[in-house]
Length: 166
Image (tube, rainbow, N blue to C red):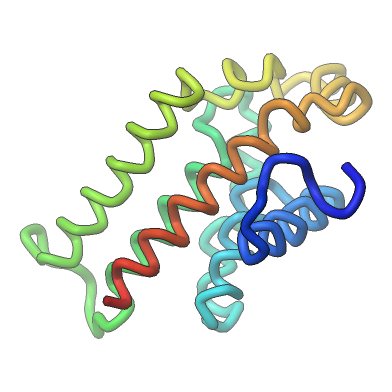
């Protein structure tokens, strides 16, 4: 993996990917990592956005949760679609409906590519078991799973952001 990682060719996505990997190395969850890199790329302040994923480790530690990358990206896409809102979304708010469509598109693409959205199914690790957590890091399971998923989701969210800015 010299000079960056071996999946991404786009410089911007590569920079975001590297930042996410750094955060994961610091033991942040993938949900926190993806939200942070996308938030920073969008120019949003840390508060209040970053707090939206702060408790996600509690979900992971249950051993039964969706991929944290998808969780964090879903939050980002909700914020992205409601950027100019001054109040909570109404049920039929166009921005809310756009966020639902955007997240649905992300999930469907993810499922088509990786077959699952469940963290345990994707990594083979039950995060409620210490031995699985240790194995995830020792065997670097994330390299063939989470790294690829992180890259995929970053690219999709950057594309959504570009479309939102048009």
